[in-house]
Length: 516
Ligand SMILES: Cc1cc2nc3c(=O)[nH]c(=O)nc-3n(C[C@H](O)[C@H](O)[C@H](O)COP(=O)(O)OP(=O)(O)OC[C@H]3O[C@@H](n4cnc5c(N)ncnc54)[C@H](O)[C@@H]3O)c2cc1C
View 1 (cartoon, rainbow, N blue to C red):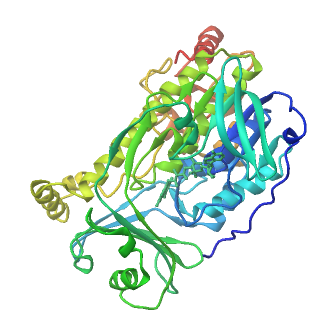
View 2 (view 1 turned 90 degrees about the horizontal axis):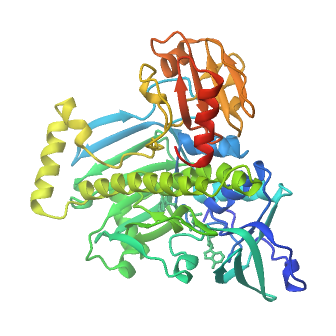
View 3 (view 1 turned 135 degrees about the vertical axis):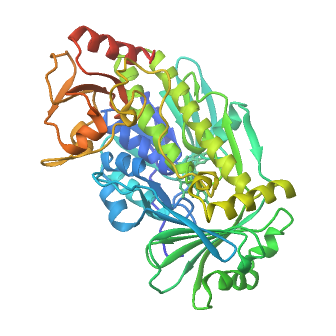
């Protein structure tokens, strides 16, 4: 394996010898989501203890495609540049049917964003960067080989923990369950994880191979080199390539992971034998979610709350959007500047986001792996048509790649302003005279005033910008000026062409109540 799997040291926690004072937040799980959550909370001034049963970063590449929004979130957490520099930037996807290229798509056809459409980087690298950042942050107490064995809640949350030196327990105001798809906390609370299993198996292999392969995603429907099943190829750094091959439900995982079976399959994809197998796994996929993500003092995020098939890269990216949504809300509730209604809005918004991800991922999986002959015939006809006619291309589904959802039911709007920045959407980045808009927004409420004036409103940072071509396109349309109220997670809360202080204060109060 090309990653650094040196174990992190176990440090006996204070709780082994004395009762620790009640913590604000305990996070269970140091995967990408738990680590990002700890950093997000620290940036809002909230200390946390992070417990993980393990002491190494992820085995195998797992998540490799990090979306533009995730890169913006990671950038705010201080690791965006490391991820973007280390990873392979791409935005071109190419679709093949049998041996013919059907069409290609560009995921970010416009310029004027600090972050690219996608960066491919193995999950273990991302985790490593997040761990470095957590270890450099005094507000984060990261504890390896601390396995949570029990959970209880009342006025506070309590966890029992096992370590190599014995058991201890912790109390916290909130417990964040970031303990992954098999979440023991979900299990301990007896919560149902409803959804579906796809009766399909995929071989996922990382290979190391020299060569000048372009930075693009290739997806083959029914290629001749793989007996008519689907195949996917992605480039990662360090000359590592990810290959996903559909195997069928009847494939025997024990047989299929043997190198003597895997290698000939891969040779057919890459056309030669000059590669080294780095990691092989056989997967089945589920799409599931918890009914609710907030259970009093225990809040679920990441894979513990929802899982999707990887086509569309919506697992890790969706989890980072949970972090983005929850961080400022939990910080406000802990600081007493907002009530529990704000956490309900996390539940409502991220359940909505998870459903969108599940819907997309389910549709993609069905299109790729048709369950009936009729469905296959339809799929093949769509592909044949898409090779000739533009209108059929949106029907081809090789995975709609992760984008943040637009939250419903949000605040005041003026529909004369552009659709892409309507309330509920994440603000669009734009180049400014010195740097990027995203870098100027920070992590508090912002009143973004473009081309006009706005009243002072208590507790609001005001950012005045002169009109530029990009700002006009993304924020004004034909309007002469605009005022945008942005939440700390950079989601548009409300917007006006002109507004008085009362309208702005009311919109902000509604957000803090969790009403919009
Ligand atoms: C093959 C594959 C490809 C994927 N590709 C992509 C992709 O391209 N893009 C994308 O966005 N996503 C992708 N994903 C999904 C992505 O890997 C997950 O969504 C992501 O790992 C979720 O992170 P997490 O932190 O929620 O959970 P995990 O990464 O699973 O972390 C959970 C952590 O909790 C710890 N833990 C568990 N139980 C306990 C306990 N009792 N006590 C203490 N600690 C505990 C575990 O040790 C682990 O460290 C892919 C997944 C797979 C399998």
